[in-house]
Image 1 (cartoon, rainbow, N blue to C red):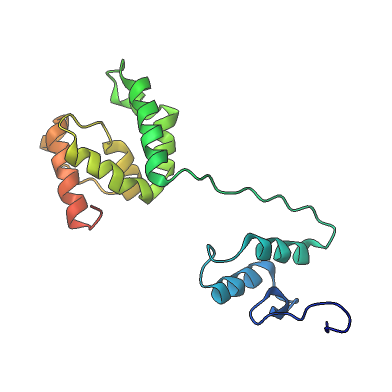
Image 2: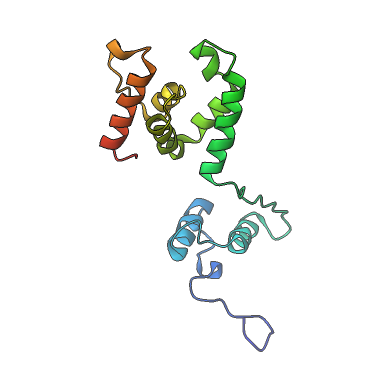
Length: 165
């Protein structure tokens, strides 16, 4: 690749510098190291890596991440869950609502948001099952089960102690 041939020479740290005999996952790892993080890796560079690995004629579809922030997603799902669970009295039925399950699927990103709601809302929602599923913790003493405000206080105390809020 020379300027005479009309091709541009590879830039330092570009995909061309990665050995072609490496497995795909190793090439991605090295690329991430070069760029500092997966986020810093451009979509163009990643697509180039995929095409290089799968063959030049491969069709690569790139789906961009939703512009919705974690906080916005949590708020949207929490609102859906609250609307759907309002007529319910069974906490078991409440946690089976898809929006609640999606919040659990958000993992640790949702934990500080749920803990802040428990801390700041005078009438807290039932985030206990989601928190327990994600964190694998249960800071609520058995004698406080069923007392929503006491359960909320126990989780908030746990969150502060663990540095989650």
